[in-house]
Length: 461
Image (cartoon, rainbow, N blue to C red):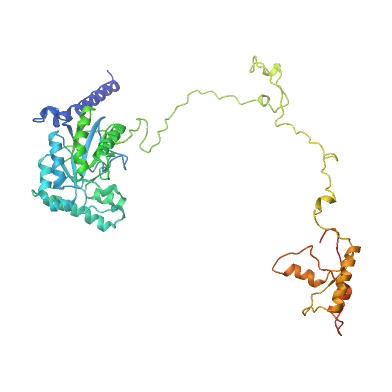
């Protein structure tokens, strides 16, 4: 056997042993249902997963590209915001009845107010993590000094509540999942792993316990595995948790407990692709682009270039003598012009021209037709008109002139029609005569006669 074949056999054996250890080790380190005293039908904890926070500093597909390396139908239970004795103690009892282990992200102020509750979580075999000191809302908007203070004081408060000189697990979850680059960087500097989640049950909202159960199972079925986010300070969570665990058991789900790696406890062997939410194919590089293979072209013949005669736009078609060998059995297509031929448009003739509109189109119906004769228009007077006997005579004369087709319009009447409150009174012409105008404007020395002739066209008044 050559060296290449021997290397392949050894690699295959190593892979098989690794897979066998990954499948069998969890069951040996977990609490099976058969090992749960007094509860033979319990869900149990299938295995314990040991992780190194420094190798994978951020997990949870709700916000990050990586999550815990779980197999299909494996679930990690997490609880936030405790301990709150009224509800946290009930959560611990429900988990103990099913021999299920979970991870609790405790708030520092809650731990300081109830240190006994912190020790109960530890004594029950659950993993204790931190969730800041005061659970600030909108932590991603806080200054970095306040962020550091919240993280440091939260760890100190939980450590003091444990009371045995031990520290909580280096797992940290941002309140409200309000992540920020500064928060993640500082947590990584502390050696902590930032946890998001793979799916929540919305138990912090004002919903019923039935709705919490439905959301948990619907989202678990959609994901198939992952980290479930719950809260141990809600009455609806206490009411929904037993049904959630029973349904997980009925559907074949398994619970995984997560602990940090230590000097005495090595991390569980995993492959990088197991941590990714969507494992990349083997031939895809880490830069998201597939590697370009180095193809070797040996004795590759050059493809012949196209002949000019193969183009439709060429006028010279190949003759059988010089092109039969390359176009055997080919039927020449009819020649076509490179572009559609231009179709001449018919010239505009007198028949297609539009007729000239007649004069009757612009006439106004219902208006009196006045004879196109000259009338006298006087300028606007500078003083108020006083009626006199001559004015009465002029009015009678104007009526006679209208009958004969001639009308004299004073300028005062015309101007008043244009300027009186913006209203037009066209067609209502007050008759006047030359004698009337003379009486209104007697001759004055040095002043011209205020008279002028205006040609009025028929139908314009």
